[in-house]
Length: 136
Image (tube, rainbow, N blue to C red; front, side):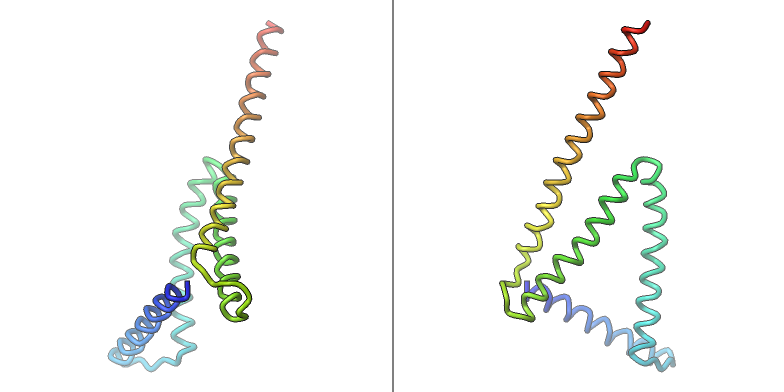
């Protein structure tokens, strides 16, 4: 996990330096804070447009799908925050596998939830069809 984070940090640092060089080459002098403002702002708006489009499509199909994506996103942040906290404090081992197993736990429990939900929905439909046949 530590190596994975080091690779990500190296990539981000390289991109940062490239952006500063490009901006300087174009004649724009930007501070680090201004660069963060524009890069994160543009990434956020790009992400928002994509997410808005996808969630509109999903909302026509299932709110459960949107809830799952949102929960999974929050869990991704939480599990990586826990792993980073373990590295910083030295309490526990910072391992990518821990994050993966934690997310697997959510997915397995979510699949159990979906199975129960679908079974109950099927039973309700069956009960409804049997009840309607008795009344006709």
